[in-house]
Image (cartoon, rainbow, N blue to C red):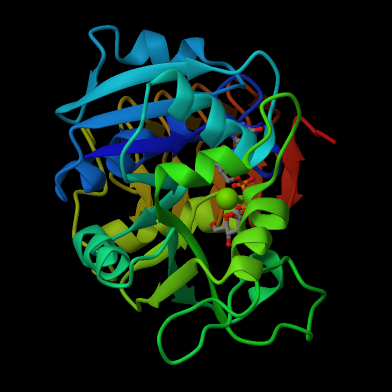
Length: 333
Ligand code: GDD
Ligand code: MG
C-alpha cells in the first residue's frame, strides 16, 4: 500500500516555530510530527510513503538520510513551486509512478483513525475517492462534508463562514483515492483538492466519506500543537513520559502537565504549567510559564511571566522581568 503525505506547506500559523523548520519536523513529545504520522500509516499496512515536499525539503532529507522513516520506505517528491493540495498530490503520485488505489494524508494531522476500515469502505462502495470525517465544535476552519445515508458526499465546503456550515463533520485529511483522480488534476498550475477536485467529484457522484469519532487533531496552530502534546501525556490519548533528564530542574521549581525536551534548565522557584519547552531551553529563577511554547535554545530571564498561548522562537533571549501574554517572539506576519 502506498501513501502520499502532504508536507509542503509553509506552516504560517505556527510562526516563529516554522521560521526555519517545516511544521511536520517539529517534535510532538520529542518525536517529529512526520514520524508519528508515518508510523500510524505503517500500522495499517502502508509500506511506501511519498513525501510531497515544498517548503524546506532538506529538513526531511537530512532527518532520514537512508530513506526510511518509522519502518516505511520514503520517496521524495520536491515541487518546483507550491502547487496547492491537489497539485501536490498529482505531482507526487506521478513522480512515484502510482497507478493503483492509494492513500493521501495531510501531514499535520495526528489521529488514531482506522485507515484499514476507510480502505475497506472505499472498496465496498466502488468509490473513486473516500474521505475520513471527524466531528468538531467549530467547522469554519475546515472542509465541511455532509453525506447521505449511503456515505455519498452531498457537498464539499472548504472553510465556510462561521455559523453557515451544514454539518459539524469535517474533512479529517485522510483520503483513499483511485488513480483516475490524478487525471482530474492539471499539471501546469496550482490546484486545490478541497476547492476544485473534490467538488468536481461530488458533481459526478463518485466521492464518498466515512464518519469516525476516534482521536483526531490538526496540529497546525500553536494552540493545537500544544494540545496534541498534552493529550499524549495526560491520558487523553496516551500516557507518554513528559520530562526527560530532569537533573537541571531546581528542586524548588514546579513543573505540571508540561512536556520538556532534553537539557532543559529550570531555576529556583520557577513554575511551568500546561506548556511545551523544547530542547536546551533555560528558564530563569522565579519565571512563570503557562499555556505557552518555548522553542529550542531560548532563554527566559529571571522573574518573567509568559502566558496565554505565547510562542517564543528558537534561540530567543528574553530579558529579566519580561511580561508576555499571547505574544509571538520574534513577531512574524
Ligand atoms: N506539497 C505541498 N504543496 N503541500 C502543501 C501545499 C502545497 O502547495 N499546501 C499545503 N500543503 C500541505 C500542508 O503542509 C499540510 O500538511 C496539508 O497540505 C494541509 O494544509 P494545511 O495548510 O494544514 O490546511 P488546513 O489545515 O487549513 O486545511 C486542510 O486540513 C483540514 C484538516 O486538518 C483541508 O484539507 C481541510 O479541508 C481539512 O478539514
Ligand atoms: Mg492543517
